[in-house]
Image (cartoon, rainbow, N blue to C red):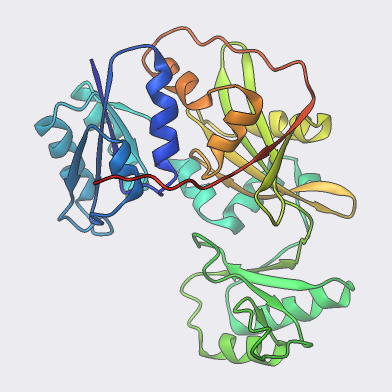
Length: 335
């Protein structure tokens, strides 16, 4: 029996756990969060409310104690990931396998968009990047906005360290706020200047062209049979497409050689000047992985779990080159 713990995950962990149940070995899934109403709670065999603040130091010690107390065999961390990975050897010494990429340096790099781009650039892969401007003060920020706009493209910015695009903004001097159009993502150049003058730049800002093409999200797993890649093309609706595009896969395979990731990771692309460029790299499973698995008929979470457990990992790409998929929400009674 393998007891598998998910801590503080997104609601899509509901689907990841469901997929992992197809591993073919005895499994029990344990979930935890400070939020008692997490959706993935209802896919777990056991559930615990976490009282410890996951953003405080010492959280990895709390997790290690939790693993011991509840006889955890496999820990799938999301919250507190960097601290947990830095203490990976403590978990390994207790026989606890981390379902996570454990190269702490590469986690630090991918946590910061500027660091990510600089690392890729220094690896000789600059052609995979859009133009970008790292800014560490207000003067650099204002200059970057002017230079970016002078190229004749729409400009955007965000903090280099951000999750969920909370600080993402598009510069749009035609922004008119009214009852029908009040997007929180659009601001004028004047408003951006005012924000910069008030900001202490404790975290750097990255300025770059606004890439408005459909996003391509590639979930990946390194295996003995090569790099498994599931490229998912997003739209503004609930329709998606798995498309095994040769150029996307070629770039992803080359990029993967420079990151020491043995568990699932995700690369996001958008088009820039007719070429796919890297938007960001996430060292974990994406929130839409279940869609890619359904369309491709390849269960990537199960393959990753089998790899972690030292079992055989066999897979093959489907004969088709592309397939559409829709995401439909369905109600479910849980009480």
